[in-house]
Image (cartoon, rainbow, N blue to C red; front, side, top):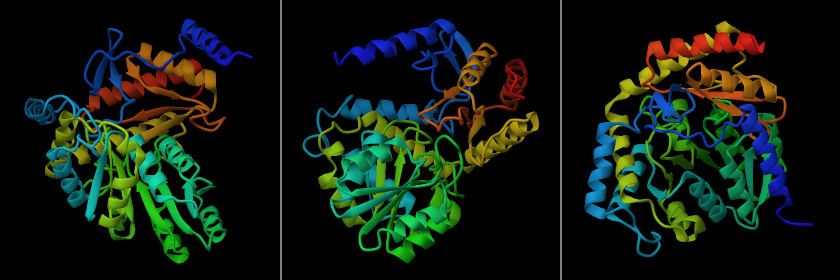
Length: 393
């Protein structure tokens, strides 16, 4: 059997989707990530981005990136472990640690590498990683790279989590959970997780990729939102959502961060975050702290859209954040709605199995502080028209 045979079969399937107008991957954007974008020459309202505060095109953020390039050049030409550790990397780490009220922080080149490196460094041969079955793929892969045992529990089910903890009483345990779940838009039951962790002697690692800049009065994420900042051991986050760039970080006790710093292979064997992106993140953090009105606008838009979808008769699951799934429960109807919405001026993401369980196919919509009332009204009008056309409302 030829190892490339499966590639030919996949290419044939992809070709069929393209011919029918139902291929929605690698769409070509020709403008900045903003509330409106240009895709293949067509201007559409963007409701498929994680740019929650709308900072990727902010003048101050762009100026900071340009200034860093002028001072440091375009890249680091090596790993931070050796020659690629810049002064601005360490400055950003101090700023992140202060922002999150932790002793130390460590910056990686991507969010994916952050979870890969931190989890595989922390979870050793005699340890157990306990994860929510809806956790991000990077958490799953970090667990696979570790030498520890991995236990999954049913999504946000605290009885299932307790059973997993009960079954690993004699081992060192790390509960790893998304603060805001990236497809469903619901929030982890952090108070219950903290209570169980303390009862069973487990540590908590919180992936706050979709919560930093969004949840909490100061935008510090899920732990702040619940008033549990001192109870969460490690906070992980990405730069590619509210922080307007790319990269990731882990924050926690200084000795834990030092351990990860010297053992995380995804940092040791990868070139470091470019100067321009490091400066962008630092400036985005400043804006988050200085302009709470951005977060207020984001939440106004979120509440408007949650109410609007429900009024139209759509199922939005248990979402309570700017990530709002429109649950269709049918692959071809999901594809067809995505196609028709684009024709009606709306960019949205079609999500099918295996990204979500079979029978829970959905359109993943997400909103920004910079969306206008007029844009959101147009989105709801398009969803009403297309939903009736496809027969889902």
